[in-house]
Amino acid sequence: MSTPGRGLHGHVLESLGPAITAGEYPPGSVLRTDELAQRFEVSRSVMREAVRVLESMHLVESRRRVGVTVLPTSEWNVYDPQVIRWRLAGADRPRQLRSLTVLRSAVEPVAAGLAAQHATAEECAELTECALGMVATSRGHQLEKYLFHDIAFHRVILNASRNEMFARLGDVVAEVLTGRTHHQVMFWDPDPAAVTLHVKLAEAVRERDAARAEELTREIAVGALQELDILAP
Image (cartoon, rainbow, N blue to C red; front, top):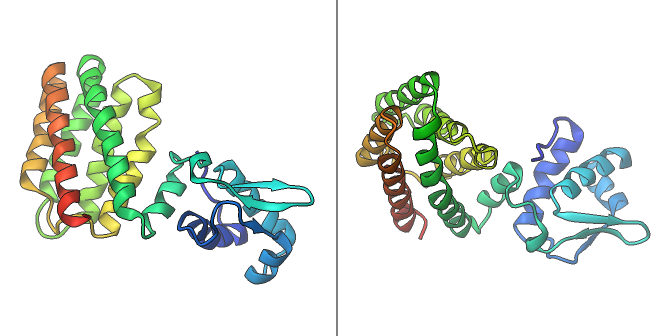
């Protein structure tokens, strides 16, 4: 998964990437690197580096004598954390959030069941620590601190599943949770029932109760979808 670099080409990406994912440049649009270099007041080499990053995300395709062509959405690497971030910043945010949350509801319960079977004592302790951190920051409008523990919690679950495909979705889940927080698709204080479910999930993993862990994670996913119905209809 790609991560835009810092510096001049990173500055270009932070403007051009969201414009592409928001549809300002529809699929089939041809971008001229010379014109873009002038627009962003950067050298052609910087512009080419930015294009290479966009190509790695499958947002564009560069061809000699044609230019840089914007690819259809079906070609995009929709699992790339930066692509997710850009799409969540656009007008398509509600649909994107729902799509990603449905993905989580399909994957994370299975991952939780596997985590209950495979988690080490250290991972169980880390999971409990994250859950307690969520409890401690769930009141008083501490969403950024809560987010830190929430992301860490779900990373532990995915990693403890011992399935490398699930583990790689840690960055995707992090972007979803971050996007919900930063774009105000969260209540000022997290739903107490959801916080409690995370605590119970940590306990189920520690007790090696795979069925219970899977059931609790499904409840968390259902709650997340219900929140979207209210906050991002």
